[in-house]
Length: 455
Ligand SMILES: *Cc1c(COP(=O)(O)O)cnc(C)c1O
Image: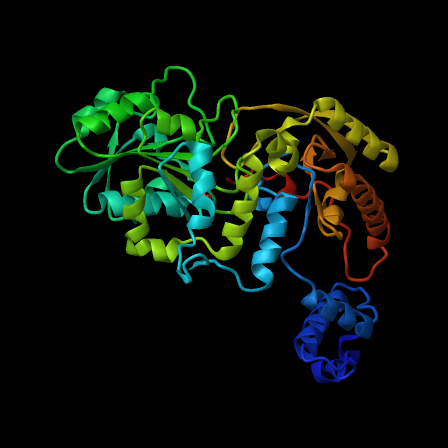
């Protein structure tokens, strides 16, 4: 076919009755011109138009099979929700709800009431508040407690949380001034003590969630910082990052932090807690109330779907053994390596791959050094791109010329789907070369699958 043989956009669009036809025809013809320019054949234009229209209507935000071995993968939507949490979301979303309505009194109620009791019980706090995410929680805490005043924070804790967003930049938007103390590797309670004065609004501790400083290091304990804060009559705010509600070696819990004297503790809902995106603030009632009344609170409050999912997740934690079984992040974290290996062996047998020992990670800014024994099914690297573009998409890790499909982050019920996806990906590659205008993925191309995790 030559360029001048191509139909016009309108001619091609008229072959279907669809309000999106003109835009789709334009896209199909642009690709056809490219294919002809490259000496290829543009293919069946009407079939391509129908495919283009199907693609235009297909959902963009889709389920993905996570074969990276990174449990809380920020790029892949962090924590999957427990069934029980999903049920709460569907019920709250389908019709009306008592979101801000007190059914006993027949009057306005608070959206916070639905989760506050569970959060108090699980952390030992006097009061709790849920906002949109943890960055918002810290922002709100500093705005409410230290606007126009100084917040003392260690230089070793001014972290970047991912995608170029840095804690200090978020914090200064609160209207508080950051007063940095100590050095990258060593900060002592005495550094905070020296900096504290009439200008001080709060002391802030930020958990080194996504990195560790090793070697010649020193950090004050929460109890030591709380002592300094008390002497100066200001609150200690502790940003934990990933709030775990179960005992987990190396990851601080809100309960421990409050018990050690922090007056407000902030953490995410969708990291190791395994719930929806949310920022949770727990602590002294009088301080939580100041946050609740601050104008910014209205701008960062959690929506009803989040609150429903969080209530459903927290309900599981009231029975810790149940949380371990039913909260997906905890279940994946706790699964014995032997059963991960069995899953990898099943997948390898189904696709003709090899079982490979790997290291899974928590991700999402928690336990950055923790290596979790895991197993993957290794297949040819060239499948990385077609697997990402398949249905459902499968995302693995490219390493040493092979694609590793880590089975710690896959469920038993997903193995068959992955096996089918591998078969289709091989087929897609076999036909890609022959398909007009569509080059086969170049081997060794840079895959997003091998990019580092963002938290
Ligand atoms: C992840 C993280 C945040 C940001 O939490 P989001 O819920 O993603 O807003 C803030 N502080 C620390 C220490 C974190 O690890």
